[in-house]
View 1 (cartoon, helix red, strand yellow):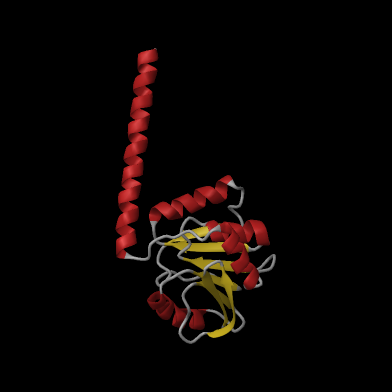
View 2 (cartoon, helix red, strand yellow):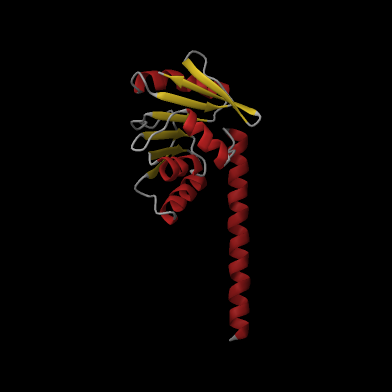
Length: 180
């Protein structure tokens, strides 16, 4: 009995290590071939969403939502309906799992896919942490898809021609607020 349990534990540990290795290889591959995932700390997320004026009942979209933290914070801390679009399958599934564990599956939802190919959902606030060239590509999509008055908040990187309404230094970074 003890030998069977020990063998089971060894196999379980080996499986966990193999799964972690596959995840890390995938994560590094994606980091070198597209935008790497860099989590926005919760304290910054709260300040950024407050800067955007996110209110209860509003809809917030995070393009390139990573582990879902921003979407979850919007739902949990601001009473918003959060929506995330994420290309990396591992982060997409992790986001869905986190929302489910936290009981936020109804107010924090996720789609796996490209922000350039998916039909983006309705939103009052769009949250971005993308490289400048991606902001430049995303800008005409935002202008075409969203009505006047939609707010766009971007961490660190600005948009070329969106109308900037505010900017704030949060930690060492500048956060930009735009209105379509």
